[in-house]
Length: 255
Length: 236
Ligand SMILES: Nc1ncnc2c1ncn2[C@@H]1O[C@H](COP(=O)(O)OP(=O)(O)OP(=O)(O)O)[C@@H](O)[C@H]1O
Ligand SMILES: [Mg+2]
Image 1 (tube, protein in one colour):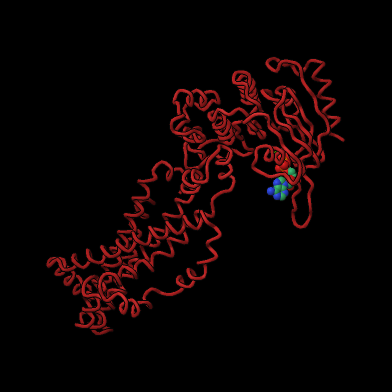
Image 2 (tube, protein in one colour; image 1 turned 90 degrees about the horizontal axis):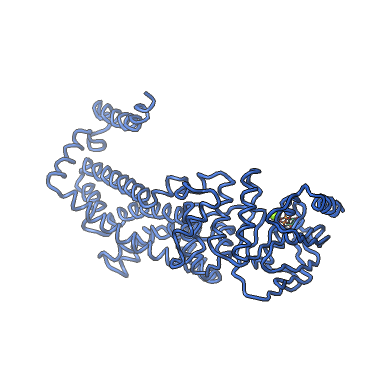
């Protein structure tokens, strides 16, 4: 009994939201332009599914996210590793990093358009800026947080600095790195939608903006749903991959 | 008899603006191919001394001389296993890829009584099993000099006795040198070729034991006498 309740309880929340929406739009407190009915949204959604346009937008946005995310990860990992191997270097770029961490990537769009045009480069840079910091900070946290006692084990068995990094620091930091990647992925999604609303002619963000300009609130809502669902699915997939990759250890409390 | 020679080793720590003189000029000779036991109360600096000998810590003053190159390793007071590795992988942690001999590793795991737990992760083991894994890890490394910091403290009477026997056998077969820390006088009497009592950061007494450590009976008058002697020194 308890099991079935815990299994259906997420759906109860969703049901309540949709129920409220249905009732509110039915008694027409707001005009259908402000709040379209669920049926209207659903029918536009199914039309967009049938015509396939939505898939194109999803694929384009997803492709951009993936590209920027991968670049950001490689950068964050490289810089995080560098930060560990040459601790003294941190002083030189610490403030620059902190500065950029506090600048929302979207505020850079005007500059980026000026410098890189409205092509793919601008969007990639936005995503890199958005997802780099959570990954970099988590990677550094994982690396610097390494248990000194375990590092001493490396000393006790004659490990070189490099071996200690690959055999102790890296596996120790894995959990933090993966958390960083997950957060970075989420940030990438947020950023790309914003970027596409300002500087794109394709993608989910652009689709939403276009719908707004054509007063199609129903399509706007469809776009929001799709973003939420795609983000959720990516995050879940991420979780599954993590579990699969670190099966033995993950099951044993090391996560 | 030559081995490692410590001359006037000093070490202090400052904790909250208070300076603690942990080691106040330790002069010690650690003979080769035998078991040297360091005995002392909790907090007297045994671990500190071991860490200095093992090169994990620098002494403030003093010298250390080795007559030969040693392949040294450590059994820490805590097990310090890698939580992401299972018992098997932890045991071969010190080995390079080409040095891994499955038969040897298996026999070492069997020796410490962990047969059947090769796939278990550290957090699935009891404290004593973790400690035995750490001992196996040190043995698999095939060192010529092992420093052991109260390695059997977490074990029950029977396992402890069995492990002590194994250690004696191993030390004999491989001719390793062992620096062994304990606060159990009986353990020191059972294992040691040389027993060193530390108190107040200095060596209070040294005893050389001639009897073969293969078959010592602590109830013999010789050992009872020695035990009394050691207790007196510790009391000072
Ligand atoms: N890293 C450190 N920083 C400050 N003080 C330390 C440090 N390590 C040890 N000490 C101090 O040095 C003294 C000796 O510690 P040590 O660990 O060598 O004792 P021990 O003889 O091994 O004790 P036990 O039998 O309980 O393990 C203690 O008073 C401790 O507070
Ligand atoms: Mg100690």
